[in-house]
Image (cartoon, rainbow, N blue to C red; front, side, top):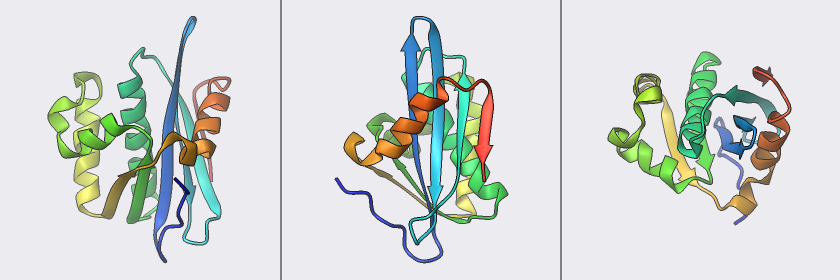
Length: 144
């Protein structure tokens, strides 16, 4: 699967996460690119969870919140998590620890041109690499 450019006037964010069990470390991240393929920002966030699903969900939440705050209202979110893709169709599967924030983000997407797609892990190597780097960064890190 080859990474594809977003169409004109759209932003694309690839999200991912990483989890190490011993010692417990988890991180989510995202990389934003414009319709020319240029990186326009990124984030990484340390989390306190042992759930890969929560890590993936939190990455999507942060991506949507950041895009909304920057008025990037044409957003394409791409993930290598099929479970996350299903959560966009059925919010009932989202764990309670992130449910309220998830539902708030779903409301934000109603005011956006928003789409979410799946990409195989091989096409998500930049986000995957950032997640692994993020394991060594404490807290939240945003690059604009």
